[in-house]
Amino acid sequence: MFAVNTWLQKLSVPRASLVALLLGGMNVLSFAPFFVWPLQFVTLALLFSIVLLHPEWNKKQLFVVSFSYAFGMMFSGVSWLLIAMTRYGGMPWILAIIALAFLASYMALFPTLTLLFARSLRRRWSIPNSVLLLLVIPALWALFEYLRGYLMTGFPWLSLGYAQVASPLAGFAPVLGVYGLSGIVCLIAACVSLFVLKASRRKRTAGLALLLVVFGLGFGLQNIAWTSPHGKPLSVRLAQGNIDQGVKFDADFIDSTLSLYRSMITEKPADLIAVPETALPILTSQLPPDYLPQLQTYASESGSNLFVGVATDDGNNRYSNSVLGYSAHDTQVYRYDKHHLVPFGEFVPYGFRWFVNMMQIPLGEFASPGVLQANQRVKDQRVMPNICYEDLFGDEIALQLRAQAQTAQGAATILLNVSNLAWYGDSIAIPQHLQISQMRSLETGRPMLRSTNTGATAIINERGEIIAQLPTLTLGSLAGQVQGMQGLTPYIRFGDATMALLAGLALLAAYFISARRPRRLQQ
Image (cartoon, rainbow, N blue to C red; front, side, top):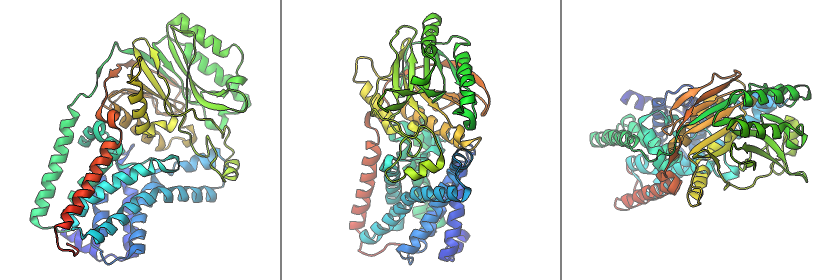
């Protein structure tokens, strides 16, 4: 560790930026499908050490080095967007790379601002390195990740906490959510950084003790059952049509697609049968008149409950990305509309119509009904759908469940995600999205069913464990059992407020600690 310290101290800004860029790229290996989650602590610890070992750097130099780490992580972590923009969007490669670089740069601003703001507080409050590492940086990282998930509709992909769904730290998810878990990740990295920085033996010992306490607490929290089984398990069938995105909206293939999904739905009864997002690739107004009524007839006759992804047409140029539910017990059609829309894919941000036209993506404008929508009864369970990347927003799912718990029907006991990731081929986007769904199960203490076009179609239990999954890019149906769960985790009850409160307390503690010390930088 001490040799690493000496080497890091000798780095110039250009070399430190290159090292940081490589470290950021390596951090992607912490996430699915690689699952090297301990690597996250190492790369962050080295980043923090580089920053603290060079107090002479000005703001511009610190920005360049910090941004290099964040850009390396974001650019490599969401590089799968190039597939959608070039293979299916028709965009020239050079323009696609520039567009990806802009998005990655925006995402990278938040970790960068974390370290810039931390250095600013360090100088203003005369905070010693140990306090900066253990209190300020974890608190700010969690808060800035929250902002990334909120500003400009939000895009919280690659939040640090997602990499920890299978680690002992996953026990914090039902309490603090993914952003709080990101702060815990930074706290662990800070403990490691104390060794790289050659802190005093007392501080290193305290850091090691804190590391063991955090992991021990994570283990302990994993043993708490925040929710309990409700009713009887449901039999489920989740369809994966494996329709290539290049032909999905081709008029020559629409009839065969409609026939395929009708066959998959009616193949065999189940309590719950789901097909992916926009599995029916045309508007409801364009479907054969008897298509949807036939599905309702099958649901009634077979005792099955169907969830069908389709774009609905309400007239007057109002369209929605929807899930229609056909019940075995009720002829009234259930409907859930996607509320958190994808920029450029489902709505056009102001001033960017030219960009969407260049990408040649159909169905570019949808309406949003708002976050709070009803769930659907399936036997003695309540099922709450979400569509595509809506399951990135754990605070919105928690809000839905919290609001539903106040109604006579009660909160959903099962979550259902329908997605179409065929835009991104056989890339790491598919396992990354599956990992995000696992986090939602951990936060809510509820199973998550996933029906997708090309993957990952899976059944996830309330502990975030994948209990069944179809191979990616295959045609088939995933059959299994799922047990609904009732009760509210702390995260459902309070959302991200707990994380924000703890982050605020950490910053307040750092201020009072610094106020009791001489007004000079503490090394």
